Image 1 (cartoon, one colour):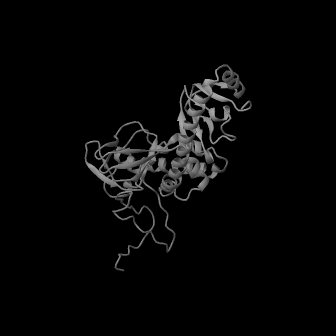
Image 2: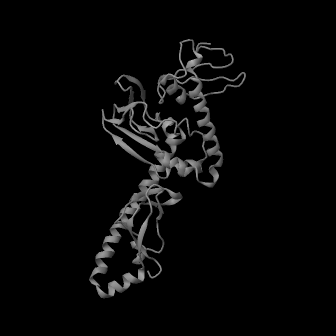
Length: 306
């Protein structure tokens, strides 16, 4: 106990982390960390702490285990009370750790790996990205986000169905499990929501924040990922400047039209090699209905019946 202090947070915010830097929870001023080690009830700490990148300067009071022993000799009746309290906290935290790791493995990581933006990313990058993420639940007819609200995150549907609506309330499309909203906002291409998202069934939504993305891009092996995302952002900005792909169509679309620019910044550019084929997304895709525009080259359309 002499060598295992506990800490009282008096300002700032810290993340409590478990295996592979997975964030168990964030704590605020007034919480005590490390009490089980300080009173000698455990030999090894099950969690670590890290100052939140957005939580400001962290200040703590360090309470040595030896100081607790002195206090217990003065007030012996307090030892049992503290040990019972800490024991209950340890049991609850162990349950939380198991639940958190199960959620990351079974829900968050597979969902991230299935998004168009992150498909094919290395496992260590996805684990770093998922580590601080959380999900939210939404009841039927509840607004998930509203058009025009500030945004810097991507939303992934873990469960349920979500309608996307225009600012006027017109239904645009429907997302189901693995559907994605807000890729442009996550990449910093837009700073507000382009659509209103409304739950039409009970839904679970995973929010991928810009802070989480920047955190993941700081791991040593993320250099290639960072370069790839920078190229993607540059490509999307070029699409917006040129009005691609709608300006390729004979519909009189203008590069400076807000709708054309919004479509351009979300459009995914696909390259198809000679003699290779491209299977269009079905209307029943989790990502909703899509329109493909042949911008360059020639292609042969083959119907399902040959």
